[in-house]
Every structure is written in C-alpha cells, then in structure tokens.
Figure 1 (cartoon, helix red, strand yellow):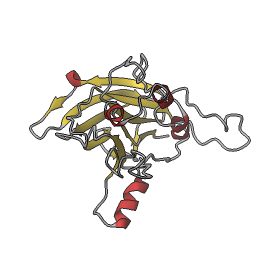
Figure 2 (figure 1 turned 90 degrees about the vertical axis):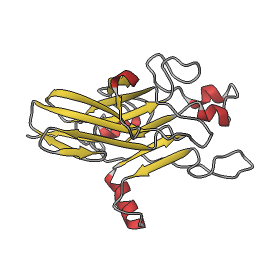
Figure 3 (figure 1 turned 90 degrees about the horizontal axis):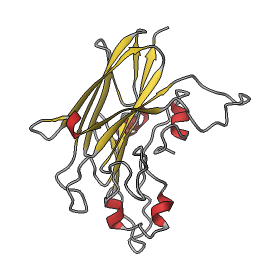
Figure 4 (figure 1 turned 60 degrees about the vertical axis):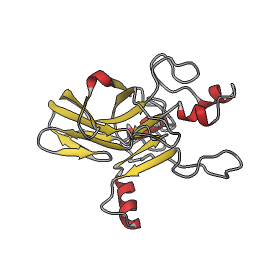
Length: 238
C-alpha cells in the first residue's frame, strides 16, 4: 500500500486525504521468531513531550516517519518558499510560480539491533499531484492509483553532506510550482535491481517473492531496510 509509487496511499494523498502511515510490530510470540515491539520496526513521532496526549497529538499531526531495522534514527524533512516552512504532515501555502526548497536531514545509528552499521544507499523524493477529494458516485472513486506520482529525484551519498554529528543533509529546489502537489520520502540500504528485493527502478518487490524462496528470516530482514516519511502538501494560492 505504501511501497508502490502511485499506489493506494498515493491515491489517497492525491485527494489530499490526511492519511498518515505508522508502523506496527506484528508481535505474537518469541516462539514464532517474531521481533519484539520496536526491535525491528519503529515509528518516530515529533511531540512536545512524552505524555500520551502529546504523542497522540503528534501522530495526528502527521509529523512522523517509520523505519525498518534502524536504517535511520532521525529525520528532519521540510519544505519552504522562503516565507514559511512546513514539516511532515504540514501544508505549505505558496504563490503560483514559487520555488520550493526541500531540506532533508537524516542520521543513521552507529549500530542496529542486529549489531550492524546501517548505511543508506539512496533516498527518493517522491512527488504527486493533488486533485481534490473524490466522492461516491464518481467513476474514479474506486481507483487505487495516482498516475501522477513519481520519483522526482534520487539522492545518493554524493548528493549529501555530513556534519560532525553524523547528520546527512540534502538540499533540493522545486522551481516554478504551478499546481497543488505533495512530496514524501523513502530511503533504503538497497541498490536498484537487487535480486528478489528491488526492481530496475529501485522499487521494493512484493515480499512473497522472497518468502517463497525461504528468504524470510532475521538475516534477510536486516538485509532489507527502508524508511518512509509522511507527506508535505504544497498548495498554490488561488
């Protein structure tokens, strides 16, 4: 639902439905080889403090991202037109023709729960058009795709700088914005065309392909790491 560019989640975002993503642990028992809650999959939420109310408010805001295998442990993703700034879950209002500056800052931990040093291979900046809500009765209502969604830019290590605190920073400009859009991020430790993992465009392959080959254990999980951000909407003033 989330991994497919232009899939179900993108169809919802294209209607400007504030449908945020979060990761679950899917923990049943240690006997079944499951990961403990938070051991492999994490949701990071920006909140004012650690109180339940603040955490729920942070989740409702959409200012959150999800991670597999501790690929990253921090993410700061913003968009600005020089006058105002929006974070994940936010809406940046701009004048038609504006240039939007995107800043992505992320950091990986020194080691994850498998004892590995996770390394990001690339980060994709994904963009799609926002066309407005579709309601029952409209022929498009049951569509689960957004054909406008695409990878706007793929960033690799040569595209980011790293500071003394280990934060990697990417800056990118979207010029001459003419219509309502949204942007979101995904990143991975995998390259493109990895057998049983990614296709020639770097998209993750369906899990069943690997599972059917018996590639469904701890080592396989920690070899297949991803993170996804919630979107930032860019709205052109009418």
